[in-house]
Image: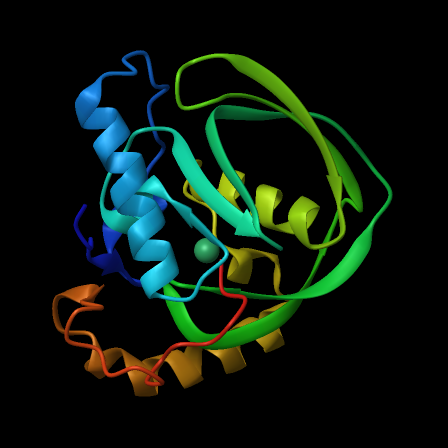
Amino acid sequence: MSLLEIHVLGSPVLRKETAPVTQFDAPFQKLIDDMFETMYAAEGIGLAAPQVGRLERVAVLDVDGQRLVIVNPEIATSEGTAKGEEGCLSIPEIFADVERPAKVVVDALDREGKPFSIEASELLGRCLQHEIDHLHGKLFIDYLSVLKRRSAMSKWEGMRRDYPGLVRNLATETKGEHRHDGEL
Ligand code: ZN
């Protein structure tokens, strides 16, 4: 396995649409393993392919010890609304409340290409929606009001010089620096 670089806000790949996965071959399995390793190294709970510069429609999650791979995921149904704080491995140290559906049912394929459905609320439901957004070029800051977004962006402007090339290299990042629990 190998650690992958994490692209940060401003890197164009974060705004790209992904392509559905059709090959569940060895290189794809390695990508998933590398994504898990990278997510754990960054102390995140979710990571989507565009965050590591890839355009396969896949994300990995580990919420409360529940490891999950979602390939070509789609939100089948959603209900209610809930507000909760979100962060993102691609926008380190920026956190904000985001309102989303409270409960979702997601249809996806597993890493072998077998279909499954998962119903989720609370943190898992939020994380699933956040990662699915990534697969369509959408970021949590897109949901913020103009004022809140502006304040998040001015904080980010002060930090982005820490990321030359708009990537995070976890192998050289000092532990504790830019790493917070619960980023997605
Ligand atoms: Zn994210």
